[in-house]
Image 1 (cartoon, rainbow over the protein chains, first blue to last red):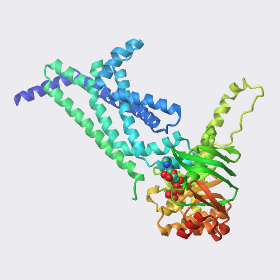
Image 2: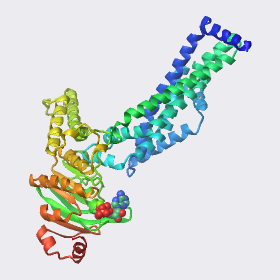
Image 3: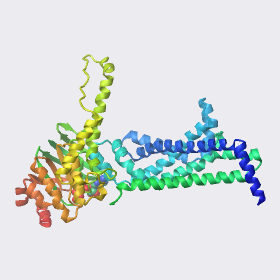
Length: 236
Length: 274
Ligand SMILES: Nc1ncnc2c1ncn2[C@@H]1O[C@H](COP(=O)(O)OP(=O)(O)OP(=O)(O)O)[C@@H](O)[C@H]1O
Ligand SMILES: [Mg+2]
């Protein structure tokens, strides 16, 4: 095992002396940035889509919107994230002649992608809320949208919080592919440390531990949030 | 106050209401009875367009609200509704349940007035007769404070001030229904619609809800009530309707209605429930 301690020494050397930690902090920041902003964009898009999909459909406009939303969801759920990243970065942006950095594209694609998944989660959540809640809101003169926003969606969110947490964890894990479009995430940072010291075992081990730590922290956060949201649930 | 003219409602092929004609006057206490599945709830829910009528008119304060072009939300502010299963907002405290709608709609009106004032110089460019800015005397804080005051006094009235800050899930059925009634009162409605308000309650809680409804009746509130409480109908109603298969088969004062029922199906129905 002398071998291992040598490897650790090497890792520490390149981590500290060759500014490896700067890269890691940068990578961690980008990983979290992509996952968090992706989730936020995803929640906005997902909630809008889910709302459209539960509007009663006897009129034309909701039908058309619903069709568009179904197509969107099918598109983003039917292709791998890497493909979406590559297509947006190397096909769509050049065609539209706009310039985004790899990081910006990653945030965008993660948002669009998670929007599709979250819309399904959110729709399930909305349908799990007693229809009487919407009726109660409409009966006092609130519009469909207002009743949705103030009464139904808050309760739906509470129901789907655990699933939403899993979606966030999925996003964190999926960030490991953003180097395909040149965004510098955790993988890029540890890859850099590995290649500069010609030693990959310890860097990748540390990388794995950071991912695990992130996931554990998030799981804990969700538990705490669930508990504080449980207030209105039952007698206490 | 409400003129129902030839009201029809169809669910797909299933015709539930076949031309209902009835007039509800201010101060009326109208009780609707009929066998299960006869269309009582559907009738009531058509009155405030919770179900869109498929034919006929509902003239409420001079406007045909069955017309899909009218903004139903504005008219619903003047029509309270109380449900069998209460439908209190589970994510709001009792006080918030009562305050939500009054605060929201008044703040919405306030924002609209402010917006119109803001754009007035611009919109006036296109008007022959220039308009003055609307006077805005209130603020969101004032609206909220007033709604809270009003909500608390309603809670005091039903002896539940101590429950202001709890969530509905901690209340008994009777308490929930009284809060639901008070919630619709907070909008100062012209009429309140009740769909079997006591059917989901344990027997010992029916009284407290009926007492509150009697108190409202005594104050002159206009009410339309679907119920199986025949005693209540006799005592409080001034008009009783019997609906079967989507039609009004008999209507009248409780004395005529219960004392001398003419329609054979009504007689049959009464013999079963009384
Ligand atoms: N949303 C709906 N979709 C389809 N059919 C419906 C709907 N609501 C009611 N119906 C049908 O309309 C008929 C009348 O129902 P309604 O609820 O008005 O009866 P009711 O007189 O209130 O009965 P109850 O005393 O059991 O409450 C029933 O046959 C019911 O199946
Ligand atoms: Mg019914």
